[in-house]
Image 1 (tube, helix red, strand yellow):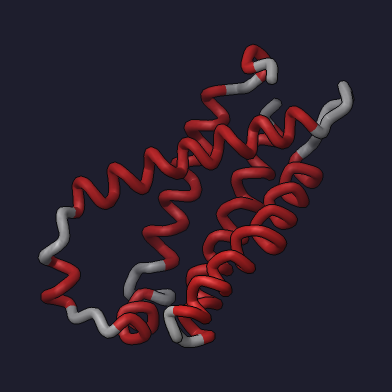
Image 2 (cartoon, helix red, strand yellow):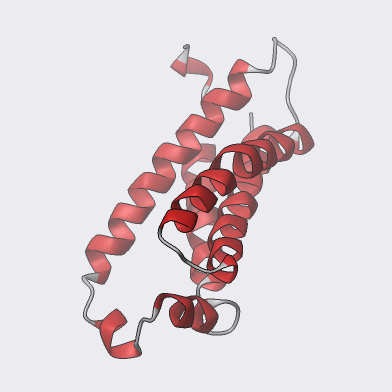
Length: 139
């Protein structure tokens, strides 16, 4: 794999966009309260977490995912430029066929609800599509 063709600024922006989407997605105005209820989390329990560690580690993992998506987009371009739409499709395919199904398998064994699966897996699908679109557009 040739890392010299990867746009690292685009990787950083894609990870930042995924992180910002997560803040909105899991915020109180969208799915935060439903997600919290499905997991049985209280406001007090959530406040006990080390948010610096959780957010910092999440962002690092999103950077790794964005780098992987950049490698995937670059590896499938066959020398032709990939645009935002093809990048978006790459993210959708990875999100739907690998991430959402993997989360589904885990949640089945954990006996969690379909609501939780939809909230968590659709977030991953949307943010991977967003990452792919950013990386595809910004090659």
